[in-house]
Length: 238
Image (cartoon, rainbow, N blue to C red; front, side, top):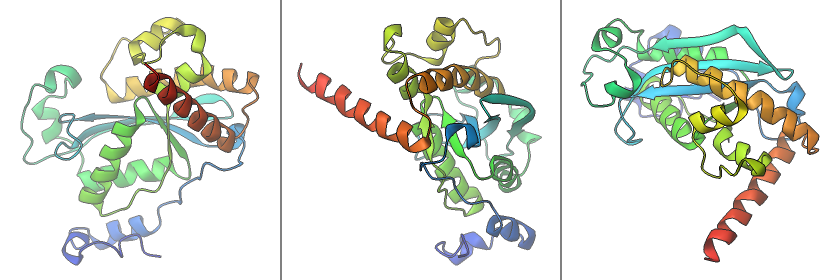
């Protein structure tokens, strides 16, 4: 089925014919099923955005790295800044440090997101505080590309306290988990650097998961569901 069939016609017409063909040929999503973690392409993604409003703000840059066979493939990394013709400078520039000149020289948003989704391939996405990245990517792909995102996300910010309760970081930040595991990141709030930092944490968590008997995507999904319910029950008891 054409992934553009559900869009208003005028939105799909913004794309060139080569872009529409690339959309049609994008790889399918990997479900959270019985596939072994070792056999799954995991793509760690980090987005820098114009702000934190998932209904209004837009993606400015994308960084991603691949984990396969419990290893980070340093030869397979993605980094791209997106062109925005009406970009407004806000206080968020103090966090991500992306200058207006970098936005002005960025790649066409549709082509950039196509490149990213082709890079990601048939995968499961990982992110730190994944719901934000998932919603921003979902909206960005819909608005800039006319594509409905179906890929699944796993939140490393949930996975870490679930697998490492002894850390006593139930709501730990990326910085706190890096410090706990003795990792360093000298370029915080750079999409590519934050994706790599999250991937390094994930390698440790994959070893923890294996030690705890979690070997498939379905088992991780099930354990996370149980962990969320238990946490909500504990919060509700107070």
